[in-house]
Length: 395
Image 1: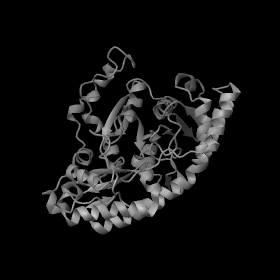
Image 2: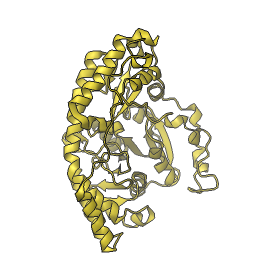
Image 3: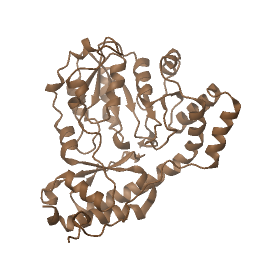
Image 4: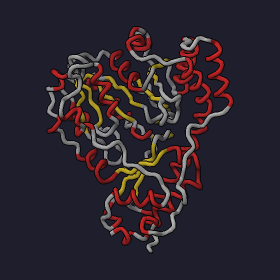
């Protein structure tokens, strides 16, 4: 019998680490019952109060509450004047909904690579991808790690582009002491079940632009938020700052401890990131320091030790069948997209950093594990150290 649990040994965490989510109490119940008893289940005052409160928490003047984060991105793109056939730069490493928002406005997603140290848009790759048809940069604060907003804003200003921030992972994240979301022209957040602020579903677009916020007709073209969601989100928002702080402190501790082990590197530590509101904690696995044991086998060993870990969203966007086969919009909505999709041959797009991350390198940990604080972090570190010490068992 081996020492590793996958080889019959005793696991570090018998039964596995478990994160309780969502967290709720009587305040949430009372808020929902108040809406129920009112009979006004789509009360605009309740919805607008949440939108304002969330926007102000994220250092923005205006918020527009919607039915999903994707609707928030779509609304931001429409408000920014993106039209049929325009090009929008999108990172290859993200969830497909980021690019689908571009599709929904009949524009063309142009996929570019990410920085190997941050997994966010590589500013040099962005600049190389700009053409006369480029109108916007849709950057993703991946896993909650803020993009390099200094470089991206400078590039956008120089080329007269506007920036939309996909903040679906980044509730509470800060760049130079300013929360993400309205650093660019607008930003969108998701409130679905997996997010660090949730009502089961929902989304919001925030902005500091009065012009963008005043385009109320866009609200009616997108999916609305209900008063139930808004009421629940208002009570959940009161807990969010403390939860962000707890995840951040545990994440910083985990990052420091991982660096001591070697071969399981956190994303680059950047002093301009003054707070990271994690969606998941990302580990960059280096198989050369684990005797060439593959990332996937390492993750299997982690699971056996009781540490739930994932590998992200699967294929990078330029490898997704929806784009390779150009089957979006055929016979459906958006009705006229396919003729513009043909402008790009996605099979010829190369994003080697994104491809390597997906295939060999990226390991993700649910950020709600960080709410367990130091004991959970120490269990993760113990499991990883144990696997490295006994790596010969996996060869």
